[in-house]
Amino acid sequence: MAAFVPLDAAKRHLGVTTTPGDPDELDLQRKLDAAETIVLDYVKTPYVPGEDPTGRVDRLLEAGILLELGELYAFHGDNLETQIRQAADGYLIPVITALLHRLRDPALA
Image (cartoon, rainbow, N blue to C red; front, side, top):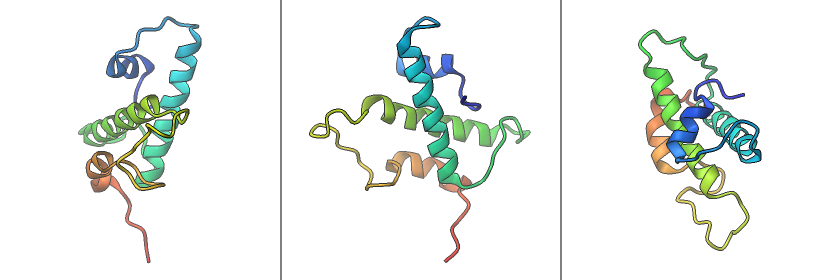
């Protein structure tokens, strides 16, 4: 279950209205969990919500997770002809990488 972004915040971000128990809510929770996993995997550093006393890290991660959630919500893979992402295969879209690059642990060559 996603730790950085509560489901209610994700629903507000997407403009989605569901009630508890609605099958669409379960699908949204899965996408939210996946978005968080994708973002945390990108930054390569284990972060714990609330660990940064300034809240800076939490806010950056939350923004990245919400943006990635928007991507997963909009492009769910059922129509590849219209699904045109700005990212190269295997990478996040540029706006997310620009947001999160300062948190990313650089790879060693």
